Length: 448
Image (cartoon, helix red, strand yellow):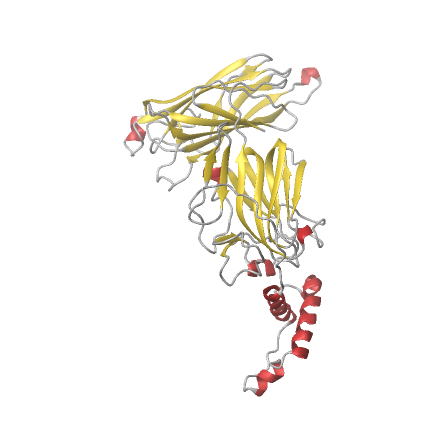
């Protein structure tokens, strides 16, 4: 049970509400006893909970707000290749929704690239005090009993994010972080149940966690809030209400950045996708287990255009899995990984590595071939981090292994010839560089 002293704000409101109920209503606790029911002796926590519920149910959050547009359909792509995703937690969204009582985390990652995590912030600095360390991210029915007053106009429906009971248990101001595998240019969400407009906000951050933009609800009730930036957005903090104001979240939409063609700026590295296709025979040790007979091939080139020599550079697998739909029984495997064994079809999973070369001096380019054994021909995601050792004692620098960046690739579909259509993104490590290039048929590029 929560400590009474921690919840001074809620307790003050609770006692005020209980005093009003006892003073004004004929059916007081004493009245209930006279009707043959024993008086209810509540602890301070129970009292504040009941008063809080009464306050939220009856609080008139009815300030009209202008209706702002959201994306039509769960996924749409415009002429420039930018993709807009819609997350409503209902059957028609990007993954077919989530059930009531689901806790939102990474369910949308494979299809949209968006990962949700509770507690975007910690410590002091919240709207009413400290940030919560137990922010609720439960999906609930907007027409059910686990929500507060939603307000007007009616912009939300079906399922939404944020349990009323979960909010009651929060120990501070709630915050949720959305992190994107592919950066976005704009992000919006509908807030419902707003009583304190200034507390319901969106904050956009770049890959270095620098604040790019803030959007704040324009009024009470239900509001659409949007943040946009010319600088790629790597994550967004959703701030739904505060410690004293339950607010639900629905109709999340965002647009990824896909820039086609060569992209190059002065930096440390270039990353180039040169070719990709379905071709070649998978190892017999894998096909005997039920893997697809044809494997996927991806050729890339990494070029050192900086001044440091890269020693023993290598790729490490961060993610290799299906992108959407029911996960296959057999895992995707990187055949060219250092630990892959063809006979037993083992290795080539997350955390496996693939060496590039012994040394990459400035202006050196190294081609790498990735071969992926597929459980089936279907959409999939392949993310690797690039590491290398730089520096030496000879130039008065301490030798160290650093992460150069992350490469995320997704086969988003298949063309008329049956070859995958590839989307790729190279995210350089902060302070290390921001150069990227893609030269490939059926390929688009997104960059942070």
